[in-house]
Image (cartoon, rainbow, N blue to C red; front, side, top):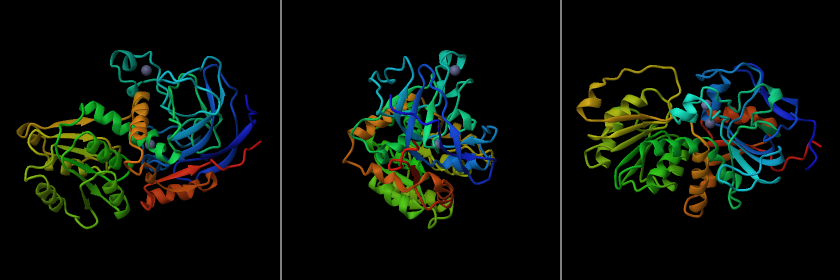
Length: 373
Ligand SMILES: [Zn+2]
Ligand SMILES: [Zn+2]
């Protein structure tokens, strides 16, 4: 076992809305089946902005270490932890990702078989500093019941990091959808990481036309390199009626068969349902806001629409996301999702850049950081 320091640095959210503070925190003693990792890379998520300002549905008591999309390198494996969820042996030095820790013993996990809804879920990125369960840190502690997957050796951190939150959510959403019909037309609302992965997955699952609606130009440009046929810049086409007409003209006058909502912008819901073709499906992946919108539900019946929501994911979605990227390396520039890398000490800049929309996915990069020992 490699030497383990007694403490490490972590970026702690002291109270909602305040800048994160770099603090020296204790590294917990290793329990059976737990894993201590050195954080290699931690992505900044769109939801980190809501979390930072206390605007998420789940509001954990502060202080805590934020960061829930992480690649960690195993420093120490607790007794009994010998393989990952895909039966691959685990060793010190392996890189892993992990899901939030569900109990696999409750009604939600075992009868409903929806562990992402587990009432006893222990989440990463929202636990007290002494638990060391957040990614904006030098080390992270993976608790015993957490499901983990090993990263394929050939993937770089930049290629893989999006799987840790955005892509695994998209994989879970498309799985719930049951896939898409060959040659069906797909519109994606939102050009953040969730929207970009949705466009790419629709393309690879056999979509006809894939249209991404969003901004700014840099994200739309990546959408095209990731398989979108057309992009609609909301900074240019500001009126929903104008966007609907553009979508109509791109989809043979019928509208899209599937709209994937990845914008997190509540009015996008009514706009997306409104543009659907008869018999179309609407997949909601992005909405987390408590805001309300006006909507006439008669259109669901009159046009025989389906509305499907999908939030969260389990370890199988991480595994599938990683395998998807591994098998398509070279076909798409997966690493371009990480638009800028930051030192742990610059985490507040990373959050502000995400907030300003100037970056697609900022990431904390610890790979060249000297060991605290
Ligand atoms: Zn996230
Ligand atoms: Zn459970």
